Image (cartoon, rainbow, N blue to C red; front, side, top):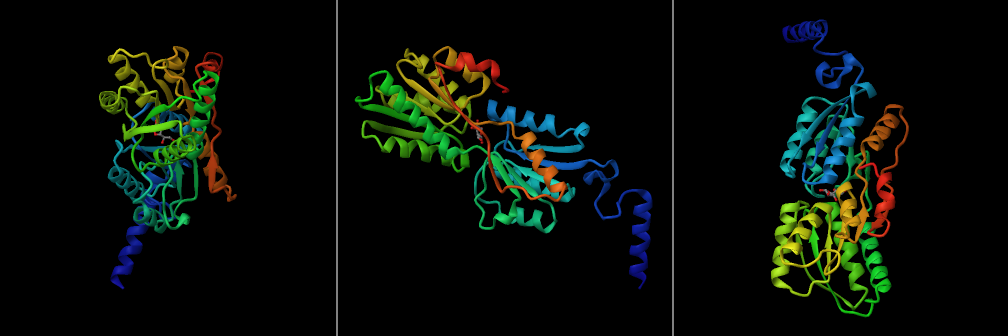
Length: 330
Ligand code: GZL
């Protein structure tokens, strides 16, 4: 009996002290007292220009003027850091958790904890591979398989236009972070597309971890191993930038001696396409902030949301980059 009196007394004290709102959420985190919707965002890291644009999209959308309090975490490309961040968001009893999962697997337990805490999880950018898709409310991102497929379609067309469609074409592939859905989808689309044409020979594939430094390092090793590379597929622009430096260092001309097909289509990649260093770039739109905000507003209004939402994406090349660049938002 004594205990119960004490709990009631303590609760009244906290309520009066404003530390505990009526529905039990801690004031500070839930933003109850300010009417703000608190969003915890577990971001992959800061590994690429694409990621920078993606982070900026969230930071400029989830501002107090729009009714949000954003708690942002940069996991430095480590899954254990993202899991820690999600647990921290649960501790703080945020209203929504958004995750850009660095890899597809290993999320069931922590998403189960978020579900048990009654906190909706929205996936942005990359996908999670979970047995129970009720663990997340919605996913918004790029169609990575189609991106890979589109890159080979562009190459087939380019080789035909340049009279090389009967030649043996040696390719190398700089992969993204192994196990990330962007890498899984793009690699599948590229390798299956190349396998359809016996003229293509995929000499090697290796991860450049979506970074420029690692992309350059791997391309240097490819150039040491093979002296007849015709095409480089780089699963993001920063690895393409590294590959360009490696190609120049051996006295070859990127975009001419070696065709470069990249992914993301960030601002600097348009400069490289205009300069003729990158031949084609498959877009992957990073501006997910407004889309995730739309999902949250629908959920707040008790409206249903689509489980899977692909963003619109195009393919650009050295021939249309100059005309299109002024229209780009990132
Ligand atoms: C794609 C995204 C990838 C980009 C890279 O949606 O996950 O991660 O292609 C980034 O630039 O590092």
